[in-house]
Length: 300
Ligand code: ATP
Ligand code: MG
Image 1 (cartoon, protein in one colour):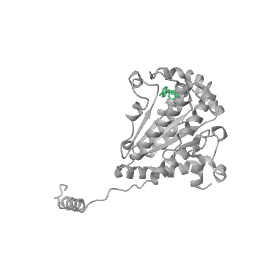
Image 2 (cartoon, protein in one colour):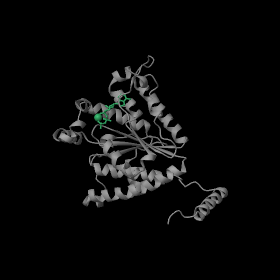
Image 3 (tube, helix red, strand yellow):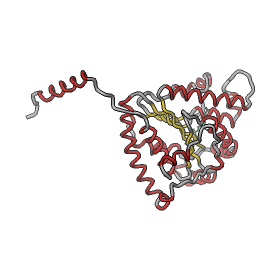
Image 4 (cartoon, protein in one colour):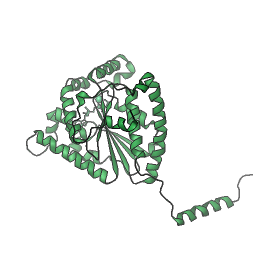
């Protein structure tokens, strides 16, 4: 598959259904990649990360755009390790990661977007949301008691309620995009079987025990409800200005390579440039250079 086609393959086309059930979680690259897939993917990832570091520097210098990367997934789908790998090549000064857990009392006292707004990336920066306001139409939809805690005015919590939340999210993201924040959204699509394998691995290896929580099993039992919530949310919020990408995540190396590629490609497609110098600035630089060169040497 050609790169452009490849990207289209993973995007949820706005106005169409996400169709999670029909999407493979086990994609392992094109035919050519499959032969020595893992090794080749590693090499591609390395090259992509080199380019990402370069383009991040221009993003920073250009100082007009910000990039918001949203990662959503079921437990053990590899959000943490994707972040670790994809960001391993970037300058930490230009990048921030926020992980969103259960909201605090103060957060619950505000509208549901408030806590995320406070963490948005500044111009020139990359911001990563490990979970995001999408939890408010996912876990909160699957667990109605969480919605009770949000202390909203009375009203029906029917499909229309969730449609309004999707609309609010779409309007919020459109606002961000219009103001220079590019929004990239990834759903790491892992199969239920692969999640089981990864949970078992966590239970087998002492150094992975800390990653396992009994609560994860309770959520696993609600797998179908989560898939329905994801299906609805991804369908309703994949827009021209902020489309969703569904990344097959059963093979971690394939997921990482795809995410890194999409992040880099997105930045590459912006009209980024180092800020041009005015004649005055150019003169000032020439003067500074002459001054330094004419300094008496303190060595010797
Ligand atoms: P990991 O398990 O890899 O450390 P995680 O993102 O699963 O990462 P946890 O502390 O296990 O982190 O779980 C965070 C929990 O917080 C998740 O179950 C998630 O659904 C929940 N959560 C996040 N945002 C909200 C929200 N707005 N309302 C209610 N629960 C939320
Ligand atoms: Mg967890």
